[in-house]
Length: 116
Image (tube, rainbow, N blue to C red; front, side, top):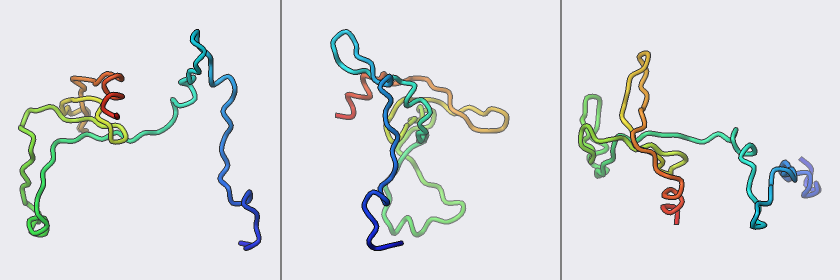
């Protein structure tokens, strides 16, 4: 790579937002057209439970070790999207694969409130 290259040659390219992606509502504020973000990938994870252990106990774990979690058996699992709690659910088995049946979905307003 040439040391005298200009900044523009190293800058990442970004797509411009099309003018029709933003629409003014009756109050004059811009609303985002949801089609712009619908194909953005997110990470979804389910959490069975958590625990805290010392490094000494962590180093003693081996095959067959049992780690007790803070969650009681039968309690709903937490469902996270990009680290944000969005629902609770229960484990199901479908065609020999694990799945989760959502039992309680957190409202968008509640999710936004938790971000503050």
